Length: 171
Image 1 (spheres, rainbow, N blue to C red):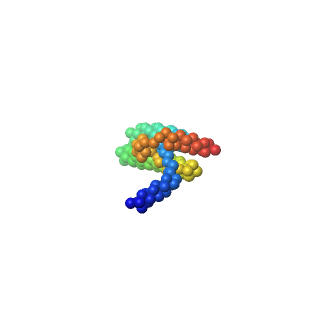
Image 2 (image 1 turned 180 degrees about the horizontal axis):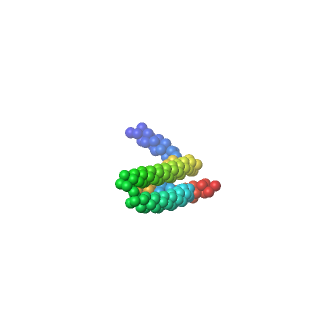
Image 3 (image 1 turned 90 degrees about the vertical axis):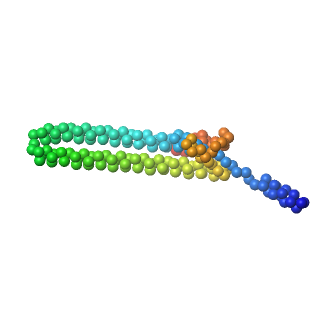
């Protein structure tokens, strides 16, 4: 019986000597959405998207004008010539649609690549912040998928990390 008490006492002393885990958490959505680099990427692609829309509208209007001219020409032509003119318009319309679709996909892929890079930057920064400041864990949460159900305000590192991340980005 004495041995059990001594063993329990030794285990309690050893357990109390261990360094406690330092744990913090961040709101991933807030960090990503409020990070200035992400805002800059979105603004850049918003300008590119607007330019793309203007180009598409311009090409669409030019094509519509061509359609009207071709229809007027087709009214005066033979049936065989009408079919050739209409087939040519259909081919041109398909090429224009494919071109616009390809440009839209390229724009989307470029945007996604840059956003993925931003997310990678944030992850690396949080990892470095955790190591530098002695954290054992920094957990992430969002409104959609809460992995942290409760945390005290002093363990919420969202604003601290966001400010440090934006400060580093400005430099």
